[in-house]
Image (cartoon, rainbow, N blue to C red; front, side):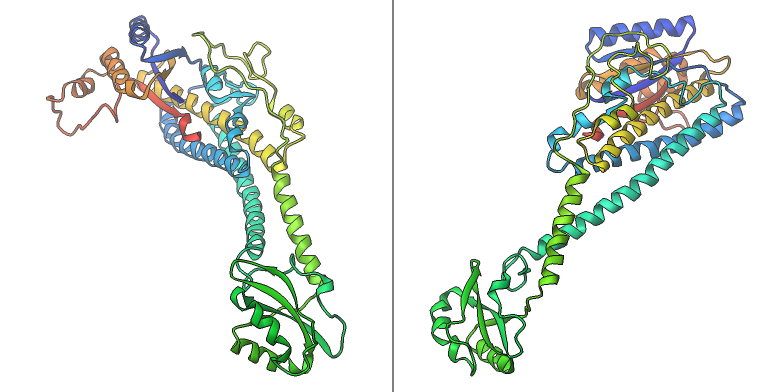
Length: 427
């Protein structure tokens, strides 16, 4: 499953033993894959400031998740001709998302732990806000391009009454630059082809004999040319309409037709350049790793498993990619990394608020093996850690216990710090 539970418990002997019991039970019952989740020691400040920061981080978490989803959807839209390759382009620091989460390391270079927590959160918020601003601008330009192209494509579809004729007619089909003569285009129903050939010369005076030619046809009828004197245009149109022939309002303008063709070519080229099918595949790390304790090191540390290249290096590598796809990949990675850092910050802040000072807790990342096992996994966790909040836990585990003014359920309360990361939303 591409779902993770990020929990924490106090770091004293009793709770470390509880964590060991949790690992034993979840392993034997094949409920989840568990790894320690390392979070650096931050400058705590006052508890009042942590309460305010908790609310701010909650909002930032929601915003970051929404931004990551929108960027993933934008990648899907840009790669409309190669949707099967989307997942291999949604990477974080050069590895697949599951590998990044299970091997998370706090980026000390980008978000120094020595800074006040408020400064770290402010850095993350500004980074994500800038990515969102750029995303709106770039996707708006791309959507405008798509809309303009679709509008042009619609003109080349439909029947002979509505579609553009610039890609059908040629200069040679018309009498041009004549003071007296003009060539009209007439739509003739298929059953009436013979009638047209017999009668078009006599529909009005001054029709040039043998001047009709079938240019193209669709399921309903054909497009014929006819040349006549300009002075009888109105009379010819009236007589043609009476015989179920429709004169299509079209006058050959070579410059206008060329402009329309060039516009279509340009839009097709611009759209293709945003994503090119010859894009360079990025290196992917393995998604399967044994349990291990992650050390807190910068993301660029050489010892980091399957880390691939930095985003800047990958951006320069993707020479076969269009600029929008390349930007989306680089900044999706940045946004996703920031999102996981926000989750780590939330665990830290909530753990201090719940377990108190001095800071002493252990964070653990659980990956449920199956959707069907999540209920059982929740029951195990609530049972193992019920001592952290006996009253509330009793209301959860014993439905017969009623506490005035307190309404809790397995779904909305946990005696331990808990946060959720769902990567399936990016599929």
